[in-house]
Length: 426
Image (cartoon, one colour):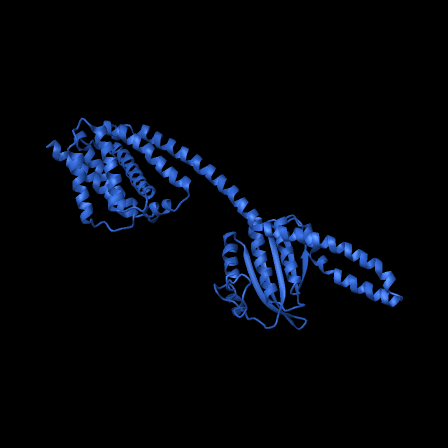
């Protein structure tokens, strides 16, 4: 009778473990021939271990289930098999703890002999209810694609729970009586893993700063090269001005030459207001685009109202979004066009407005289409990097919504010229 009772308990344990495995793999619960054979083999091996060898039974059972997962479900590598095994047993152990807590607060007394049966059946019921929650069903999938610290936490959690369950297996009645000790151990485990996650997040933040620096390094390099070139050109200009007095014989010639020189040299001053704002990355990004625009040539006039810019988004995000708008304006212009940029800040947000001339008038419906994915008025032009048009404004709209910002666009007629206006507030 005791042998049969032990087989029933082992079978119930196999059922809820099998159920968790199948749900974590997002498979149906109909067993295959391999599952049935594995179940019989597990019952045959663990069921014949003497009752006074609980340590051996528990250790052997863990090894058998780990081998079962590797062989039957053909995990790609040992790490994925250990992860699936860890996720399965962590969920199973947690559910057993919850079942024990529920049994301990039941208003009626359950006979001690029936406790293991009730516990296993209640654990199976809780497993079914738990896997009705979508995030739980893909827990293994998310962990297997997570960073190494998260996978380490999962395996570490299994090791701690393994020790707890091993102690409880030596005295099964403790599972339903010492719930406070169990909960304390679980809380300690949660605190330890929380520390690991905290330092992992700090490390990720440092890595993001490094990635951002590497991403923006070409912008800073281009500015350094421009400063060096400007310094060299400045020396040449001084020398040229010095020789004007020798090459120009009359006052009219000297005046005409000076006017020509000052007109040619005034273009870099258009971006000078950017040097006054307190966001170096934003200033560098916009200045870099202004230098590119001069090659078209397109003139960009910057009107900077506020030198201290505030925003709900990080500076790198603000720089990316404003550059998308300014880059689109440059691409829409013809040589010798002018673009006007207005930059201000109010109520903790940055306002960026860009205006560029347009050869055609766009209706409100066409302007709304600008933010659709893959929609572009520049399909006949190719980008330098080979990428397709129609992605920038769609990406911009999604990013702006993350920070509760706004983006508006319009096409207006001013002095017989059509102007496309984009206004970003973030």
